[in-house]
Amino acid sequence: AQSVTQLGSHVSVSEGALVLLRCNYSSSVPPYLFWYVQYPNQGLQLLLKYTTGATLVKGINGFEAEFKKSETSFHLTKPSAHMSDAAEYFCAVSDRNNAGNMLTFGGGTRLMAKP
Amino acid sequence: GAVVSQHPSRVICKSGTSVKIECRSLDFQATTMFWYRQFPKQSLMLMATSNEGSKATYEQGVEKDKFLINHASLTLSTLTVTSAHPEDSSFYICSARRGEQAHPEAFFGQGTRLTVV
Image 1: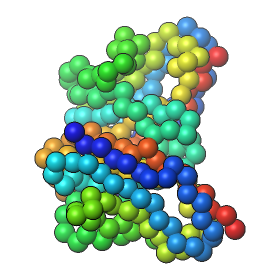
Image 2: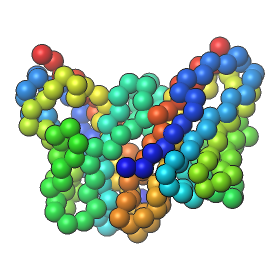
Image 3: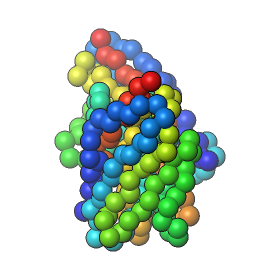
């Protein structure tokens, strides 16, 4: 069974500061990895994904994440936070052997940006 | 990217009535769709997996007679909350996946805020 742990349910950063949202997973084989963002009263929007190849992946809105197999981690970063980055962020994994299978989500991290 | 459309975005209904929520994949065929429920400030809770042409698979603790799922075509799944009660008030989200190895991500609808009064 797969599981996802997001360390820190709330993260507060100053505008312009580095954003780091942590995600660790548990899986028997390296899964597909995703980061989604959710704004209030909206669905989830894909930020980025790791499937294969380069372990540092770049996504929308200046976010990137690095897959580290040895650490079973997929932390999300952004060099400089913007007020508009305030939202809920979810890390998710899915079984690599079944692309149609459900995603397993972490508990989410609420990012707050202060001026 | 692929688009999943969910309707309505908000609905208020009286206790005891039923509410239908639609989830459509607009530019791809989805043999499988997923229905989630999200409580305030919490993660998504998978309710059921909707399979085109067959019965939905419900997660443990989810009442199948309460939450009726119909996946009649490759682009449409519906969730009907029957005899709604205030405790059914929540944010419901659907998602679909292409099922392709090159595109394993899930695409989400906009969500439906259900309020039962």
